[in-house]
Image 1: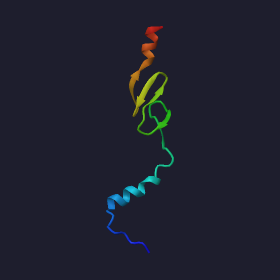
Image 2: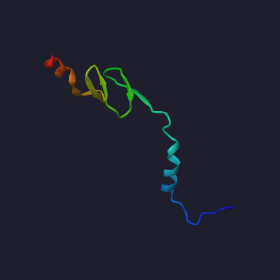
Image 3: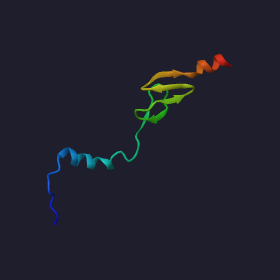
Image 4: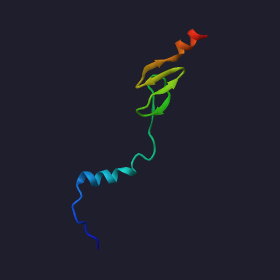
Length: 67
């Protein structure tokens, strides 16, 4: 039977064991718009970029001024 020559640290062992997790991306619902999106990702809704329920970029006003 094979025996390791050196002890593998807990950190190195645990790093190796983490790869099977997060097989399915979790989906969140925006509290402001009700839009489904990936966690920790900004998403567009009606010309606005939302992140954590707040507007980051508002392109709807810029498009109205151009037209």
